[in-house]
Length: 436
Image (cartoon, rainbow, N blue to C red; front, side, top):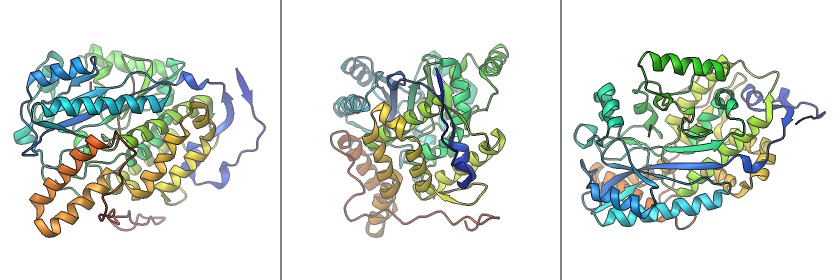
């Protein structure tokens, strides 16, 4: 059923980016309980004493984790990783309780083997040249045979969010329309400021490393579902991929489920951050499903070009980034605030207003990357680089263990987030500096 609203359009006064994000006032009825959600969290397994990433992990650990979680804990591509998978939820508070329980089980199971889970996009000290050992299995063997050294460098952990789409045939359309939002969703998750024992200068280095892999990055914006299927069939016939699960874009229609899967975010150290990002993505899926694109929205080409630049800016600056728009710069926090206002009805329908509000906390207080850098800088001043990295690793282990029990702990006391702010934008130019 379609209803037409006579409400005058308000988009003309907004920056072009937001005209692209706002929808025309033509709405499709969509019950809130249709947009169920599921989350996948990838963790590093870290030696509790040395704080190093183990090259090999006992098979017994994975067997115990599988039994203790009822099959919700799984091996990942490399030995020093483990993934937990939630059930299907219409209530994000219930999803949080389940994931908190899974974190607790994994923590207890790993401890029996002298290990501890660590939730971050990259491990502060792990080095792919010594710490990357592939998990045995036909799929992983095939992937490693294709990727060679690039596969060995896949020492990264992400957060994946599945949202069910009432009409699965519209997932390709929604995937294309979701592209402008991907930088916002990534910016709220950044947790990978270190790589191979070095400070990278980025808040989210994970996707820079992940870009080495084929079929990654922002998805191709297909005309419709039929065109997407032509692409998948051609790729399969050519032997480029066995099936669509080998498309490792930041967004993709799930092969196994009637969902649109978000794959861009870093693994969130704090569980509340992961739930907030899942809430925002879920709300956006419903909002785009219900509404048609604004008549004066940017073209698909321009919207994707802006998204690609804004994606880089959040990788570099995190929540302090400013977004490029045709009409000038827009701070990420302002983009978030506008999106939250425009999707209020969807948040209320889905019953996730409280979880969504935490996005504002992330934007104002910083992500895991900000907290890691604060811990590093505080320790580096007195103890040097190596001990500062160890301090960051210990902080990540504690937060991974504890954040599921209570609300996010925020930046450690006495360690404010560094004031690393994106340079102002001029017009023109820009001024200043699982894949299973």
